[in-house]
Every structure is written in structure tokens, then in C-alpha cells.
Image (cartoon, rainbow, N blue to C red; front, top):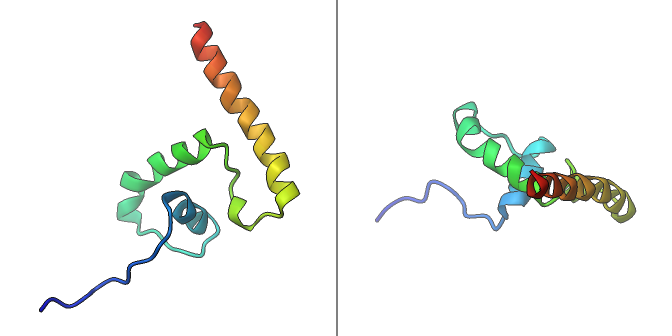
Length: 81
């Protein structure tokens, strides 16, 4: 019988990124170059501000609207190239 080394958790990828940004979870340096870049890109494409999981609703909406405008503008610019 094999011994369980890790406990399974139900975090989503975006939830993990948020926990890492807030310092609640540490990410070993060896993993950062493999994991971090794609998760930051995913967070940016979903227009999620850093620390979004711990923001008050209105603070989150205000920050997200600004980020969504940047995502939309970037997509528009790419379509017009």
C-alpha cells in the first residue's frame, strides 16, 4: 500500500494564483517558471485584479471594470491590425 504524501484540496487554478499572490500559499522557486506565467496570463484574460478573492464586492467590480476595458481594447487592437 502506498503512503499518501499530499492532501488533495479543491482549489481552482485561479484560486491558487490568488492565494499565492496574497502569501497564503508558498510556491517553490523551481515551479514558478513553469506554473506562474500561464496563471498570470489566465488571470489577466479574465480581468481579475490581484487579491480579488479578498476584496469587497464594489472594490472588486471597480477594479475589474478597468481591467476588462484593457482586455477588450487589446482584443480590438489585434483585430484592427
